[in-house]
Image (cartoon, rainbow, N blue to C red; front, side, top):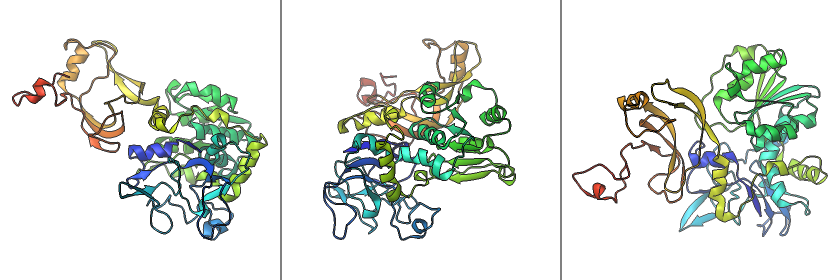
Length: 434
């Protein structure tokens, strides 16, 4: 009935999180049971439910351990995209389609194992409580369950998307006296303060590492820090900004597949603790109905986390909205004969026929230097030079068929439309779209 778009879904689309294809994504949702298989007793047709990407079988070591919540039936580790019996329930054009984390909620109907569904209050608004299926619970629980934030403590939250804002809410409920929100987009600060942040800082406003700024602000480091972005550099910064003897840092953001992190072991030797948090540490089948009940009692809010409501037909627009405001560092030439300036720029989602690429490597050519000297005509400033590079497709616009997210590509300074008279002439390579 309702599903949210989570950054983890976009990681699969971009290739940052490796999964088998074809696949139906989505894992943050709420719906109504249509039918049940033999032996299912915990839900019945007509029940309102939330699918669980972290199941709770109640029998494995993690389920039986009071400290664990990562049930052995989860697909998070193997990412095989299969049901527990090793098969799928989706087919398209005669081909099997994989499941995503045992849920696959970007569909009108899905099939989940009984261990991966929780019955909820029949009066709950599904378009709101679907956020409890991932984003809200993940952030809120990271503060309350994983870190166990104490009253009067100081916290730092890196990243102010929906999950990061939920961490802020959890820290506030736990009684933290100071909650420092960190993000490179200052437009997010008003909502962060509305939900409980006491301070908001933008790393771009400082000429020193953000961990040093936080250490100075707090007189030696925060009690708890939370990385809610999924970048290895901010994970290291979040650890370093904790108090050296008793600070606790929690990794909440999903890291890209195969990336490694390097930190100074002295950061841990002196007493800091480093933790990971999946689904906020909640035992899913037990916790989700209680969280929904707490929402119905107005113990927390969800509306500020909902930015847009779209129909199924506009799901790609939803991903564009998620990606809008993608910020990166770029070398900008502001005027001829002036040094390049490394700036934080915003890269819009690709329009029809366009491809957005994560540049991995680039060369410097004399043509770029001609631009900087102002000797190449018809170049307007400011401009980002560079035309000799290679990278990975991050997203594509409507109608693009020759490449897909995850493909390794080389941008072409000399395009080839294949349609103009120059492209169709075997003696020419000068496309008229150049």
